[in-house]
Image (cartoon, rainbow, N blue to C red; front, side):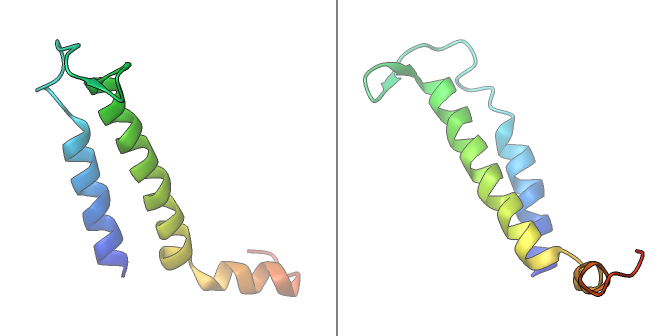
Length: 73
């Protein structure tokens, strides 16, 4: 699962660099948000979900075990 999460991180870093809507106001998403801003809002939501996945699947379990047992890391 770590490899999948790391792959998605790289993919998200690549798609974050949008040059196609850089100078464009039209079309408007939802009738009032410039398309580039809506795109970046979607990327931000995807990044938040990705980091939640990274914490759930990639966080080292031994750190939690040491913290719960009261030992020093």
